Length: 183
Image (cartoon, rainbow, N blue to C red; front, side, top):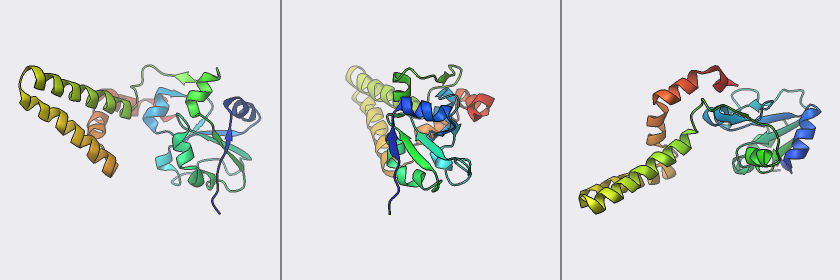
């Protein structure tokens, strides 16, 4: 029998949370550090199963990510973390929570998420390679091709070299060491 999460609106989730339901943010540390629901428990999906996702005595748990897609894609896994409690999926995730006018904690000192940094860097390199190829030398088209191949490799393997390199950058290392990133 496949377990699933029942979708719940942000307003209903906030109401249940005010009555003791546990809201669990399954996004990764870098995503959570920048913006989060203040009282949500942070349990990255990549760490799920290594530590307790939800207190054992929880009656109601509501899982969320940024848009709801990651939560929905992993709902059977999430639903099985606490078999004895009611489990929900925050429909639309953090984005829907914000659209509903519900509070979030936003820390501008934290860098934007690594995957957004990857998108900005890769997109910039493709545009730069195309522009330099058109106006300077056709050899610069190789830069765009190299970045494209890197993205294909990342998609196939689930490993992104550019994300790893960006993770070593000083602004991302400071974020990993900051106390607010651990919340």
